[in-house]
Image 1 (cartoon, rainbow over the protein chains, first blue to last red):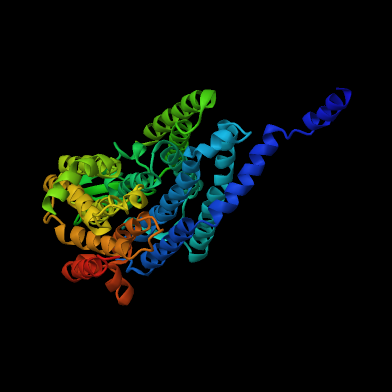
Image 2: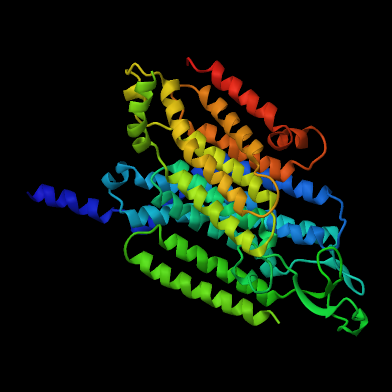
Length: 304
Length: 184
């Protein structure tokens, strides 16, 4: 009897803490996710799209600047497919037989998925540095025009926030859909409107709710007869043309971009919560909803 | 044969996973209504929507009980044909409805059929132990490549845009693959 008790005590003392368990799962998941062909397919599509976009003739002002936020779209979409695969394994019966609870396993998967967020952050950093080296982009029409437009920090962080959202929607799709194929297909049709038709969600009234926000916003400021020299000289302007019959201000704002990043992070929290078990779900759901609401308010406050 | 097919229709309809088709149909329907409200055309929605809808047809071939049913006198090809007819009966009208609501010209039926046939052709020739989910990637990926790189000049752009520019030959090629593999 004595032998049994003294033998059990060291085993209990050596039991790994929850943190160590989560980190061990995270390491495994990160390795798996970073090796996923889906992620590298997305990287290939993103780099290909970047190359095609930058090779295309810069035939209208702001063409390259406004296409840039969309470039990370394919990578973020495929990243969410890979995360869905990771969370879909949770549906196998094997999970319930393991000595680790679902909460710890989900936390491990999420922490592991941060490796993909870091990958997107790295790509965004390289993109930002390349834009700096390039000397900036052409934006606006005379007399309100610049040839050296650079992305603000919130704009550079948008792909990173998008990646966090990608992890969230991938997690919930993988955890809640019965078949992985259905989850992937749902994610595909969920991602392609905000990525490929992002231009449709850029009006000042709708853009706070968009997934990929493209700055500058076009805000009408005068009819076609208005003398553009009467506008404040610091404004970037969009001249009347094929797509608009008025002068518009090309509105750019750090506050708007920061609010949008908050909105994306809040949305990511809401989606991630739906993939989690127990109390963590309620807490994250509430926190995510609050952050998303704050992001929306901040964006509307920034738009004149 | 016809009697057998008719008898297998009802249990097959219950066994087919309708979730992907309904999910894709709902999203495309909502998008079509939004674009209709804005009176805005979007070839991208048509292009990628065709890929997604074609993928649902390929996914309908996914049969977890395939090895169990292999002992039956009804061949794998016939069972897959029943699944295809059942899902196409829903998918094609759904697709036509989406394109009818979506402003712009054309129903993109050509790209939809081309991508479906390509996916089904690949699914036919997959090794017996591979899930057809792999083949469902074909229409999704090809539609994506057509959208991203279809305008690029040269062989890359031409190959990516084939389901749109040469829908009939692509559909024919897929059908040939499908028929050649019918005894597999």
